[in-house]
Amino acid sequence: MIVIVIYISFIIIYGMIKKVNCYESFKEGVSSNFKILLDIFPNLLALVFAVEVFTNSGIIELFNEYVKFINIPIEIIIQAFLKPISSSSALVMMLNVFKTFGIDSNISILSSIIQGCSDTTFYIVTLYFSCVKIKNYKYALKVGVLTDITTFILVSLF
Image (cartoon, rainbow, N blue to C red):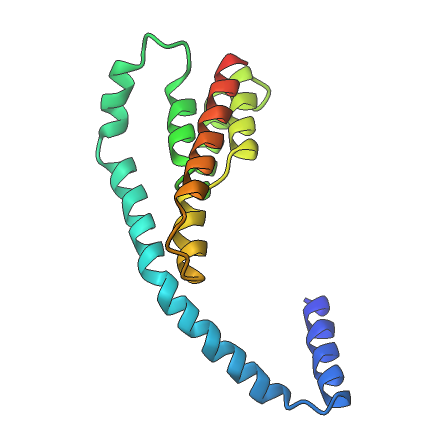
């Protein structure tokens, strides 16, 4: 907490030395960021809604019936599907794997690799690209999804 106080004090003192009205600059920054927040919020809400529908719809249990013949635990497959959409949902799956199988098991190591080696592709495309108003993001999306699929395949071979 003391670091924050020192940091804010430094900013105010620096602004006084440079003869900048710190309060007005702060208000300008907040108002411009509030506009960005209003642009991002619908996309973020849609993403949260999609993750909630996916996790609470029962698709996971239905999917579990069809992947029993694959030698990959359903938790790893679910985490691999969730990671491109939401890092926090994938983190919850990883913590569930830790609780179920222990932190030193091979499945937990696979889960950690998925969490660390793939990215939240759809989250990045939805929020960051919409924030800066980039409409043509098809190559970024393709590369991101390809990276996520490659990560999952390589982890599955492990």
